[in-house]
Image (tube, rainbow, N blue to C red; front, side, top):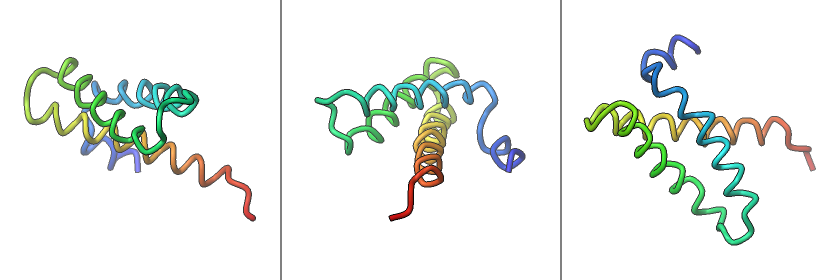
Amino acid sequence: MEELIRQYLIEDALIIVPALLFLGYLFKNTPSFKDWLIPYALTAIGVVLALLLLGLSVDAFLQGVLVSGAAVLGNQFYKQLTKDEE
């Protein structure tokens, strides 16, 4: 799995994933921030951070989308693993 991640994500862009996870946590705990907006906000922020970090290019844009997806997917995996069955 680690090899698969390294195949698609640039190592320099991986630092954005924990930042997005933290921002997602902050958004989730902000009462006026709607839950359905969180993935959109994290994607936009991830793309902007990747463009700033990697330069203005299509590859940087794609890296932003990928790290945003990794952050949202990772959060969902964690939520499902820790969820109590009803």
